[in-house]
Image 1 (spheres, rainbow, N blue to C red):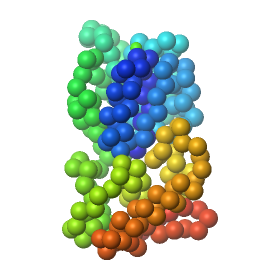
Image 2 (cartoon, protein in one colour; image 1 turned 45 degrees about the vertical axis):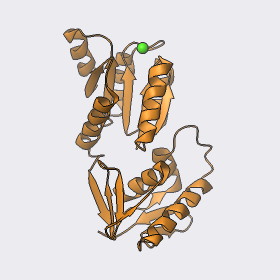
Image 3 (cartoon, helix red, strand yellow; image 1 turned 90 degrees about the vertical axis):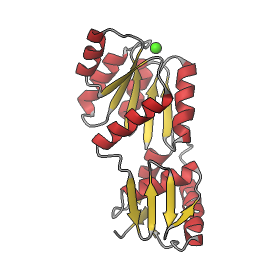
Image 4 (spheres, rainbow, N blue to C red; image 1 turned 30 degrees about the vertical axis):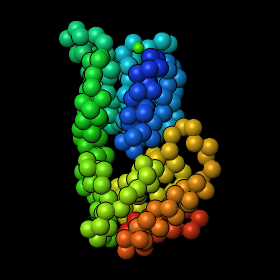
Length: 222
Ligand code: CA
């Protein structure tokens, strides 16, 4: 799952990026409204976090213009303004939810998960071929045995499981699992798939991820 943060206060942006990366999200950051809008329109994000007061283009304007192109991607506003009219204005411009600064990271994370669930992106449990992934508990088991994964391995398995039954091309995997600083060398995906297969194999589920030669990877089965 890939999230774009548009926030000009670098302390807040860094704090959010670090927290969300620990939760296995791929995260990009833009520090002004115009840069944020163009990143939001070029890349594929699963959710946007947009500050209200931004240099260049306001968060409201970013949200309005983004909504013209993407009706479904959830947007959460960050605002220091407490005025009810401002909150209503933000929601009317197309945001799905808002957080008033200062806020607890855990609350934002809970709201992110609610929005992803409402948009159909977030499910709590996924399973295929003996592998079970519990997103809320950050836990993966193979035939009932715990498997310890790094954040990137977890995110990769999550993406493949979400799309089970469909072949995931390397470029789609890059779009959703890696952030914008990734150097686009797709062979890194093959390396991570191998790491993942070895760990799953150790627990008896090594055949879960199939290679589709020249295209990408797929998890089949129920
Ligand atoms: Ca700001």
